[in-house]
Amino acid sequence: MDERACRPGPPGDAEGARDHLGSPTQFIWHYISRWRAHFAALAAAILLAASCAVAVQFEMKLLIDAMAGEAPHTHSAVWAALTAFIGLIAAESLLWRVSGWIGCKATLGAGVEMRADLFSHLGGHPISYFLENRAGSLGQRITATAGNFGALANTVTWRIAPPCVDFAGAMVVFSMIDWRMALVLGTAVPAIAVGLLLLGKKGKPLHKAYAAEAGETAGELTDVISNMWAIKAFSARVPEGERLVEKFRKEAAIQRRSWMYIERIRLLFDVVLWVVATTILCWAVYRWQERGITSGDVVIVSALTFRILHGVRDLVLSLVDIGQQFGFIEETLSLIGSPPLLTDGLGSCRLQRGGGSIEFRDVSFGYRAAGEDAIRNLKLCIPSGQKVGIVGPSGAGKSTLISLIQRLYDAQEGEVLVGGRSVRSVTQDSLRDALAVVPQEVSLFHRSVMENIRIARPSATDEEIFAAARAALCDGFVQGLPYGYHTVVGERGAKLSGGQRQRIGLARAFLKMAPIVIFDEATSALDSESEILLQKAVVDLMGGHTVIAVAHRISSILAFDRVLVMQNGTVVEDGRPADLLQQAGHFRRIWRLQSGALGNGAPAFQESRPELHGL
Ligand SMILES: Nc1ncnc2c1ncn2[C@@H]1O[C@H](COP(=O)(O)OP(=O)(O)OP(=O)(O)O)[C@@H](O)[C@H]1O
Image (cartoon, rainbow, N blue to C red; front, side):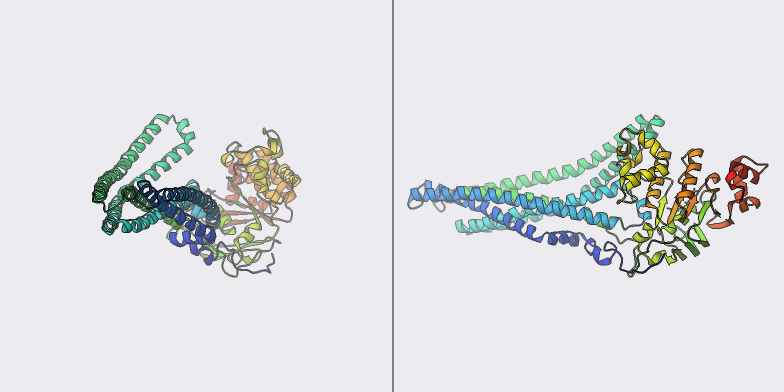
């Protein structure tokens, strides 16, 4: 494989592209500034609407004063106040609706971008990351982050900004009526807000405990549902049900504590509200009796006092919510937004499709820093176009070797080369474009057979897909499905048998026709006849391609050019199948065990494969 074009890593991997994933503030600000015109218009509409709401109260006062004849030119004053009152109500409603439309557009639009960015970043994590983190939980987090952003934007715009405007407006109105009242309200409201915030903060451990328990219970429920097969097979419905009920009860007890704490704060607040409101109202009525203020003043003082005190409670509860939403986004960013461990280095090159040689230069690799190496000091050279079978006992390192070729992990020592280039020096996408891998457990989407095969080459025509399916012996069973190639295969391909899933995996490899094709026990679930037919198809259709097949059944690799026997992370036998059968080694022993020809050895191999007599 010849390489010409070198370029920096993809945008998702570049350090700059994940700057905004560093903290919740940067993250939120990033999307607000991308939608800055919308959020600025939203803020303006909300502030205007909230100002109109205060002005409506003021017009009410003017109207009452005019009707009570306490203003000059009563009739014209009444109509003027009424007109302004009605006009302001209409303007307020209109502005709230406008803010709703803008808010909807901005939060949903930002939510789409946010999920797309998080998914793109998630895709940059190595496979080990997905082994450690459950797919359901990662997906739920991405969706919930967009939901939390929307909730946060809504909280600020609809539950925090309006009470602040109300408070500022009320202070102006109160100052115009009686500065002493303004002073009392101006002191009482912030004091109540701070008191509520402190009490809210004190309850945080209770809410955290509930959130943790709720997450644990949800995880437990998902685990039980996904193991429904085992529950039915072992008649464990009753004990599992009881176990879950126990979990639900524990969660409810913890939730009760958190909920009751909030109820106690609410009760305390209601008492304070009652005391403050009663004081201000009595004071206002007393001042009216003294003819110090008008009837309209009494109305506006009562209306604004209640409005402000209710607003301050909403504001404080919203601040508690915001804390939780921030916390959630922070947790998601620390999980999903962490820098990927395997990245394309700056200056990495695109591996051009071409030949398919593979080389391991003194490679050692262990999954854990302090543990046994899964691959030990491996030296291996596979020329382009060679068909190589890999056998060996369980845990010998066969799948690890395949993972290193795909650069799913980086070797701690030595170098892996594909097409003559170190896998670290080429982009991961271009490397994997040069490989077609069929694993033992083929991962299928909850989509149609057609779409599942097409994933290998999205530009493929229907005819090319049918041809690949025929080569992989899929066509027969697919025609028997209710909607043929348009049948949806179920979650992870649950509606298909293990062998059928493997055939779809093989069809993908035939469709992709990459220079290097890797089968990792890809035919283990097939019957022997299909396995031999597929082996023939691989040899016939993939003539010039490098093929590596990890196999437990030796019969599936007898037609290959070369066999590697692995043990304890290294190659202990290497040669043509026929040659290895002549030696008294592992390969011959495994073959004899599998063929049942304990007394005959090699002859049994040749009899079962007449076309190989010339070997
Ligand atoms: N993700 C992982 N994390 C930690 N250790 C692992 C991981 N995958 C494999 N191993 C360990 O690495 C060693 C080699 O495993 P590998 O899967 O390569 O063997 P294998 O030859 O493919 O086995 P099998 O034939 O059973 O699939 C084993 O000891 C295994 O326990």
